[in-house]
Length: 341
Image (cartoon, rainbow, N blue to C red; front, side, top):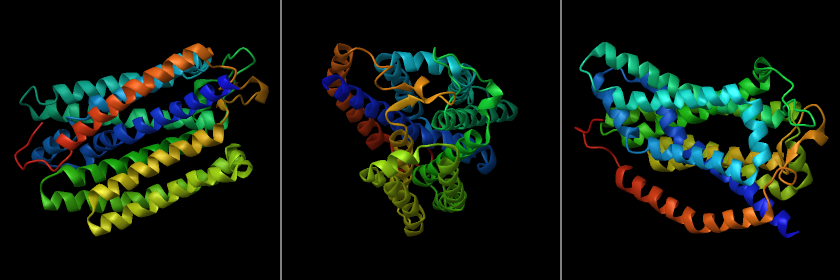
């Protein structure tokens, strides 16, 4: 019984780490996807880079932590995941490297061609991760063809099914809206604020439509809804997701951009937990045979390992959260008109 409690705790923490990554890295990925299409002047492009400059690398720490937690708490799931999804995960890693290099190299040479090349590389490095993460999680929700030994029996192309692609598109729209609101907060010029607030409002309609289609497709292609019909109290998660989503345009219309950003963050956070809640107790469902699925009970580390990890979390997570709060408190306000990256 004690072991079960710690396995459940680490399943929730696993979901929390992914949710925090999507919320925090989501806005700068969104900015990167918007940049080549919305920022036409060099000053605006530099301000957009400056809007994410102090945050992007710290935000990616949550991705590393999520991967590390999977490895330490659920090693068998980690092994199968990085085997079955090896190519998509490697492409995500390469894209994130390209994005980091683009942020550092973009302004090293005074050349318009040089800057534009890095702008497009920044776009690629910002587009690929959310799309492929969406595809990966969509397939996890749907079930991956793994056998009794955890060997992937499908092909890479099979991962790009209708539901996986739909989930990838939903991730992109989540992050585009999140990024547009962030630019409305950070950019100093009133006209730029209104421009990106208006863009966020328009993108929100796409987010709403795709979210509704996703919920219907989830009922058709997956069994995630089963837990919600089995445990009524879980309905608080989709309800909070819907409420957060509907609050975004309301706060944008009021000009309360920070509130709109937190509503967007809530949408991403609770949408992530909608998937996590539907998966429980599975972590890597098998589409071949449910008995082949990896769960929190058959893929976790020893009880002693989970206890030690829990102690580490209790000590260090508050420190990380305090540091994150300080960074956003210090650099998250509106930029000065002359600030450049």
